[in-house]
Length: 168
Image (cartoon, rainbow, N blue to C red; front, side, top):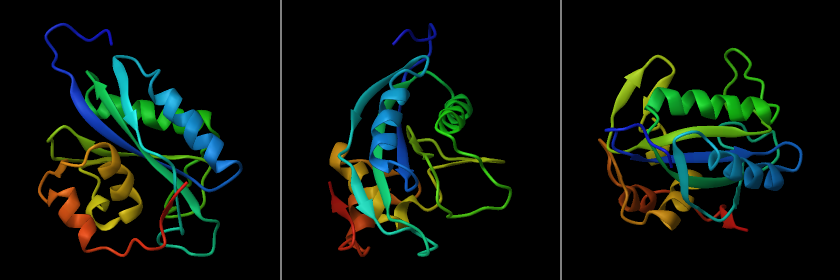
């Protein structure tokens, strides 16, 4: 990673999900695309997981994963790159659309130990501690990770129903 001089790299975790088209191939390709982001190195990626759609059940199951990045990008710069990758994969964000089917969804789950609440950028992801489909792959690659303001991810997942989520 060619960093910016004097900038300390930050460990960031990105949730990936897709349920349209060849979702498995999209998630695998998106993981590789994350490794190509400027000033960023892909440290690790979880296995793929299948889970029912969250929030709206009238759609295909999702394929999910989590990627661990080390980056000198700011959280906002990283988010902008994530949105660009989504667009490259055919994602069109409809105003007011929530929890609908998608070709690719990239969520900035954690950015170091930062807590950020700005328009369009909330870190840690506001629902991370409630989503087993994100916590299970996160814990696979970072078993000791702490969610700022929430505590250990392991503690968060222990109280969630996860029997309908399966590793592929």
